[in-house]
Image (tube, rainbow, N blue to C red):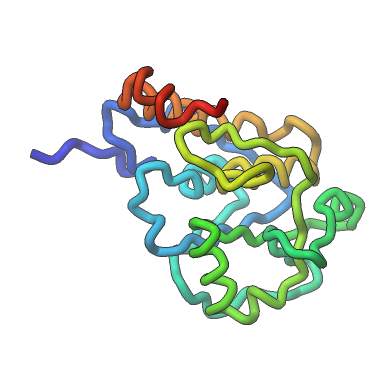
Length: 193
């Protein structure tokens, strides 16, 4: 017997996150490019981000037809030549931020398969950011989930703390995962020493 699933947030009805998902405006347009393998992932933070931002679009594809390089479009992905995100805050007019979603390997594959995307000017988040994603092993400092990266980026561009509300469903999702696995299992497998 299949569990009933919320059509909006794709969570089981008993764990629906919709009451926690805000509806936030942003000057910055956000385009989230999700690797198809991530669509059915239980912890789909890209979907939560797209639902919580009025000026966001979620595209699920390995190849994208076009991503306009109009001088106001930036790729949020680390690189040696990436510009610090804080430097965009002073630019006039709305900006568009393209955010790949997937494991690091899948995100790199999206860039490899889409030369236009890979050619976009890159921006990076500031140093010292630590993920709240306590049920996943992350490769290190600065390795954030998609929703965390988007919140950090928008806060840097439009005002510190302005988009923190977007993390409420994410935090509830993590707490729900910890509750489902049990405290002992969580401590044994996920707590950092």
